[in-house]
Image (cartoon, rainbow, N blue to C red; front, side, top):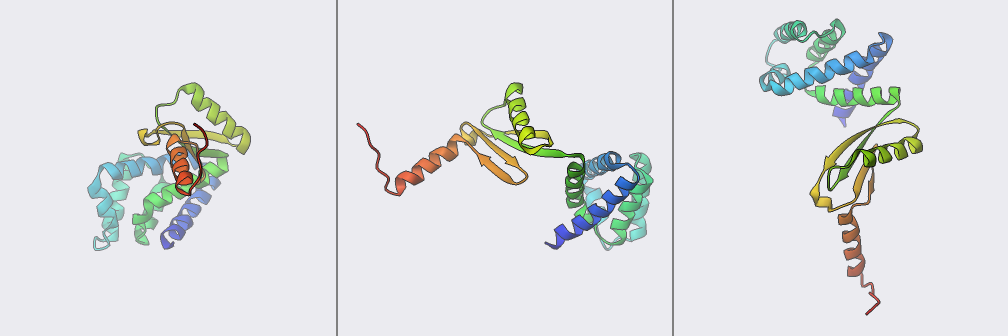
Length: 186
């Protein structure tokens, strides 16, 4: 819980600054690229989180990276603040919260769709159009393929699952029959 509150507080502050400077997309891209860089450079991620390393040294590394990665002064100041307050370990959660704030502000809805096989463009567009009409927001679909669901779809919209997979239908039928249901017929 504390992690989420910290991430929300810092992401909210960064979002306010980005909104005020009309740089929401720019800051969002910088956060993504910096985290991608940190994920590729495991030592950097660890280095930034080590409290026994002098804060000034960690800030100097951020300033050097800022020049190398073309990071804005606002972003470097934000990273310095995270280092100063020992909050760099929350960077990924801060990005996730910032992305949520950005998407809400821009009216973007991220929808995760799991299917048994790769969906055709027409199927994706049909799902996208249906959700856009129902929700009144622009939809971005993240597609994942999982043969475990056998067929059908699992759609996740803001944490609400719509499960029409064959696997779930078979499990429901099995549970129904376990409860002593009678099967009529020949």
